[in-house]
Length: 325
Image (cartoon, rainbow, N blue to C red; front, side, top):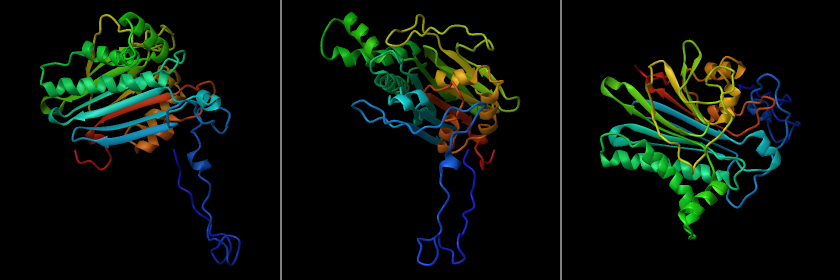
């Protein structure tokens, strides 16, 4: 994380370069903002600009609080894409339905083998969040999670089908162009301020409860490392294919835990959470950092871990520094 620096006054008159100089010169930011090394760091290099017709920033971050929760999110381009000049293929979306005090979100990882995975990830996230907001606004008794996933998948197919053609052909073409994983979910405020969460998954992006006291990462969804270091499966069934059945995972958000939702660029490096990456995030996520701080943390440098990384973190509001319980 960035450290404070003391700026030297330089020559005795307080100007760099002597009388008539431009004044004190601050230290370069490269040291303060360099990626946090974890184990053997990756080689340092200047990224290439991402190609493609649409502007897509290397890094995005956001952060805010409601009366019940604090939210931070970040998505960073991996070193493999920076080196090759490819765009960031992950995406994330989050919103609040104010009348029900519900935070809804989606995290997606475009499948690199697709033609435009970054487009698929963006469409899926926004489709899922828009559907969640619409369902909450309708006042229905419970969220229809299959409808959420279907809506996200439909966004991919509709982008192709708009040019005409049979539905099956459009679905196959959508998979070729836009295939993406998805985790969508909601955190709702229940009686007595208890926070409940529900999640659905297509593909191998994951979610965890980080228990602040013990540092234990409790996996909520099936990932490659759901059973310790053993790889369960590296297979990905992406959208627009919809898993059958669509089953929501539900849990309570304990007062001393943090909900983490992330793509496999984060999850693979995390593993079972007992290594250096797990310790790093436990140390810095016990309380909510600034949003830009999460982005810097997520951009850690570790050799061989060079995929895009996206992470959404949700804390109970009382864990925000300066908040009165």
